[in-house]
Length: 206
Image (cartoon, rainbow, N blue to C red; front, side):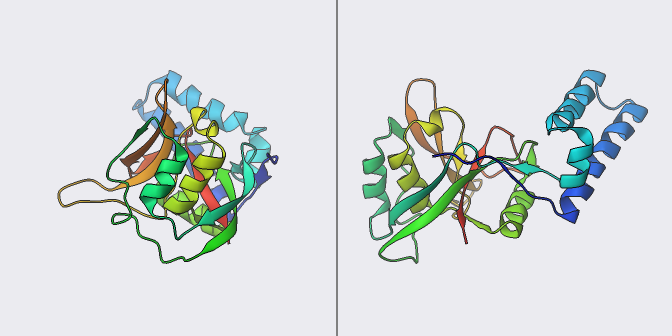
């Protein structure tokens, strides 16, 4: 298990990085952000190998944590797949009725955990996955991963973006494998406007 990071760059990535730098400089000039926060953002950029490399190569999308082949049984109910994962706590709204799939039978899928080293919007996550040959993982695929690699989610949250849960009057949420300090959890987390750099996105190679 494990594969060193894949560096991918697009024109859009370079433009966004330059935009981030420009925005930071404007915030400093206008006095709208604490200088320590500005320095933190600039340090994040610097840490992506080096500044010149970041400008020339874009984000580093790292799959160093896990790159694996999974056997996924799409005929299992979500409830059965959850049971096989042995989670200490689970959100009861993660059900077959809320997360149906059109896929049938058993298949081998190549799944990677994708890491973006900067906080990133959901729109940019989906675009970068598509441009680099991935699609977001479905709940069946996330659950197969949680069953096979139960300890990985203790390190960081692992999110599957292919299916969204929403009830009338409720915010949109997506399945996530996580760790609450004492037990493995399977939860629904808010599909917000931006994602922390702690998150890993379960993605399947097209």
